[in-house]
Image (cartoon, rainbow, N blue to C red):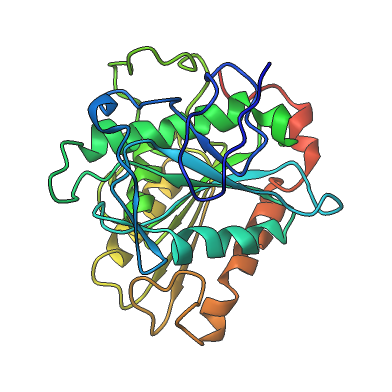
Length: 295
């Protein structure tokens, strides 16, 4: 079948969902247009200051692969923050993605539709969350093509992106189905979740009993998001679900991966994530030998 070559950090036409992925670093996860975005699918994304993405109408995944000798078959989909008004695509997307590849993880950075951008007709719960679910389904359906296990797919979100992680991982999927979603039978729930200073939407969770294992991080001085982080951790603990919480002293919101913070705890928190993933078995192929976790 014909393949499409997509330039990095650009959106162009993608193959149908059921086909093999393009030989490229970027794929449009809904094909030519996401449901409800058909009229604006031809608009160009806008890049502000080389770091912030606006005007997303064709959600996509940017794919970063680890060196072949380090690859361990684990995948993480990163959902950047930005208050649903923009995507902090570099410091909460590409920069942490490059760090994660050093642990042998294949990373997919999501561009999703922005519900609070001026003039937007999208909603967080309907459209942005649908993009996050579609991203999990897409990666799981194409796992073999990227050398990753369909049983070791994590969803990681910063701030507003953390809200989408919680909506997908800790809450039931809405009863209504996205029209013409050919991947609807593929599970959209990740195998593990990583929430970094998550916003309050989706917390408290309504389905914590079925939530995947969670790694949660926040700053003690974060008036927005330390509370939701603690609340979700307590919910998961009460529901008997594996969860680990890190609250960093003297730190506020938006510490990303220490791009603008020299505190050692912030510089090294990705190592704590890697430790947790190793302890939980998510960097170990032995998990793949058991019965599938998802229907």
